[in-house]
Amino acid sequence: MTMAAAMQSRTAEAPARSKASRIAQVDIVTDLDAAEAVWRGFEEPGHLFTPYQRYDLLSPWQRLVGAREGARPLVVIGRDADHEPLLLLPLSLRQSHGVRTACFMGGKHTTFNMGLWDIACAAQTNAADLEALLGPLREHVDVLALTQQPLRWRDQPNPFALLPRQSAINGCPQLVMEPGGPPPSRISNSFRRRLKSKEKKLQGLAGYRYHLATSDADVTRLLDWFFRVKPVRMAEQKLPNVFAEPGVEQFIRSACLAPRGEGRVIDIHALECDEEVIAIFAGVADGQRFSMMFNTYTMSEHARYSPGLILMRYIIDRYGERGYRSLDLGIGTDDYKRMFCKDDEEIFDSFVPLTSRGRLAAMAMSSLSHGKRLVKQNQMLFDLARRVRQAFG
Image 1 (cartoon, one colour):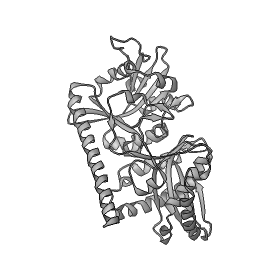
Image 2 (cartoon, helix red, strand yellow):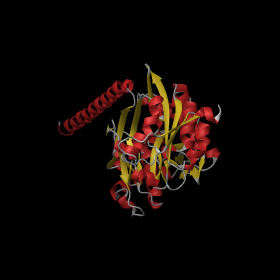
Image 3 (tube, one colour):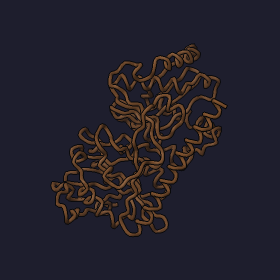
Image 4 (tube, rainbow, N blue to C red):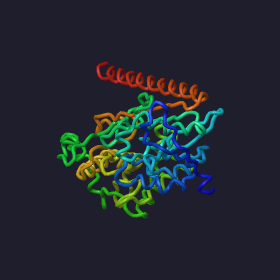
């Protein structure tokens, strides 16, 4: 595909009532290679984005998973009057029942979705800017389904919070850390003591250690183990195995092997001994936040000593000592997440119609999401009531 065929530019038509938009031009790029240089530029200092939007994470997802699901890349780049890029939206486009829907790339593998922004532009973005940005998309997209967006990132508001929005179906438990704070400020001393007594049983194992996988050989070995054990664990819990879906394993291997600074695009933390891998947690980091993506633990008798919780303590201390401000274990309210994460990250969904055909679709998506959230909340109340009855019954 030629660069010209892969990219369409339109001069953003600033709304008549306001000529204050900084966005003077919108490029719509349908080829990942054509977007790569600008995209990587947004990953340099001076930009606002979550680690889930890195090129080396989303591009293998789009090529290996999204394409197989019928999603085509739609990368939107907003530029100022001097053609300098101000923001990049990593979207993918699907067509169903005649409706063209654009979502963030990454599917169910990204905890947070967001554009990549010039940091000064993000702080000053207003409704006129968003109108100038979205106007040129109407030729290509009927509805934007922009889910799981953080309300704030790195203490800055997410500019897309200006769009119509509703609370996401599930919250994201997070641990807010005081940079350089003492260990008990992250995990209480009593919880630490409980974990230490469990760990004593593991410390006698030959070669017992916690480490971050740094070599390709370590990354590959740990992933080989993960893809053997995880399906068994998920079957045990009667959960569908998302890792068995077409292209998912290759996507995860690609992002875990892609270098980023001293680490990887997805970092793998492991607890192991000479005899076996005991537990792994894999996630993304950006200097201020660690965000967990996937994990599992051994099928052997060592599982009874809570190796996942012990590994989590190592990870929290590792990032806490490096001045990180927060950590999350992914969306969902599993009990183990609440042991570490007392706060909740505010996340929202936006369903934005761009055409009359998209209006009905946006209403349907919004209602469905709202309904699922109510069911989820009622389920939580139901579970809470059941636990209270069990405790006092």
